[in-house]
Length: 458
Image 1 (cartoon, rainbow, N blue to C red):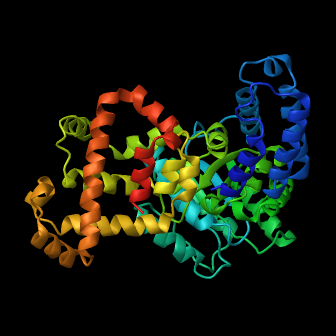
Image 2: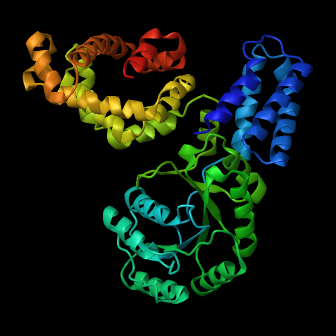
Image 3: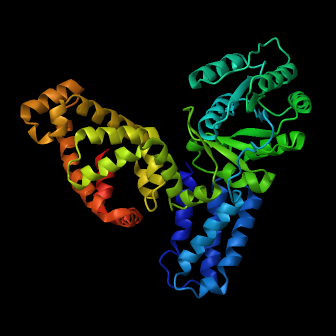
């Protein structure tokens, strides 16, 4: 995500990093490089120009030029300005209205509306403890209604009954009445899209909006289309007065132009971001966290939130005691691998750790997923005793394990060697405490042990 923009901004800011003294000329040259990085990332020209002007003016202040760490002060200003441009703070749905809160999703064909409806329903049920009703009102696209029914079934969410012969306005009106009578907190309305904005589409959406008076109208836009997504947002906003946006496919967006331009150009906040095809791959958009990740400063809060959903605290404490006593087993290792898989790709998790942004770009997610499956197969081919006491695994046992897992003896040897190294590192980490661990993460580039561990998993 935003790999291209992150790399270009890193290069643009490289000239001032580590400098004890920074002149106005240095700042001007740096801002030229930053502006070019933003434009190449498909950021709106006006947004890029105003961004660099704001940063440049603030960077020329006495508090920066006479600072003992002017480079850090300038990067701090860039971080703050990126956050401001993207919306300053998270903007979630307003669920305080009398139920059912009606949320109408609009957008062009191919933007991911139908899947996003399901993801949003799962989020509202699991995170906000609401009872959502999914409503398919796209009667034009083949199989759109069936697609939403399939998504609803996968998630265990109710989908309102409708057919391609029904009128979209009637579907919306009847669904609202059904939601009121059956105790639903939120109604999520999936509407029709087109390949491009046209009068017929907008007239239908306006008619639906007039009839059900939605509490929020959210535009679902494909982040990978860059400035075109911004233009689409402007068109929908002029016709419907949208309340916010959901940017989909952000995990595949290397440039970041839409995310950086959307709020400044439309004045509408990005409320959620889609980060993959899985039905749990939807997150609240936090401008400050995204800014930190773009600049390679990590997202510790995001990492903690992900971990808190998957980690059992009692198991975690028991594991910590095992690490301290050097009793960490291959069974424990397998459990940790599976937990990490639930949290997301290794590259995305690595990018959330301060100081490890560059390492994240070196990690091939597909290759890493394949390697994790191979490690699982090797460990599962061991006996319970072998997983607890890997020291007993001799030559004949290694051949049996390799045959059982469909791997080579060399692969088994490699895993056992890495496991020994990992145990040594974990024992050190367990003695460092949280402060020491964070220092190690912050200086990960200078810590060969951590770097080698990540590379060793490849």
